[in-house]
View 1 (cartoon, one colour):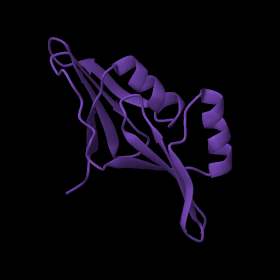
View 2 (spheres, rainbow, N blue to C red):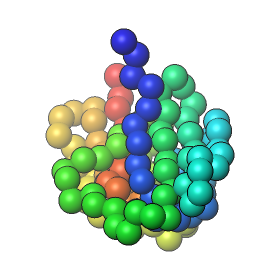
View 3 (cartoon, rainbow, N blue to C red):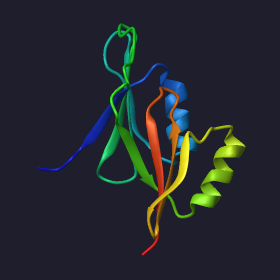
Length: 121
């Protein structure tokens, strides 16, 4: 079995797509209407994608669970400068749990925790 995608219900599709394209640098693979008031977008670079769903009938999005998505970056220092330029707050970190691994957390427009990690060999 192969892992295909992880799904996130979003409040605003345009805002969320912009975040994942411009900040996380994931290209859109597909974006389409999936029925009345529902839109779906798939983003990613590899075989595992992120699926964003905007459903106007869904009143709230509950991200109280302790979940996050992790993305590898080449340079955490450069990434933090980029985030400051984009006006995105770092909510935790940098954290170095072991030599060669450093990460920070930010929030996407829906409140989803995003972990950006630099790992050296």
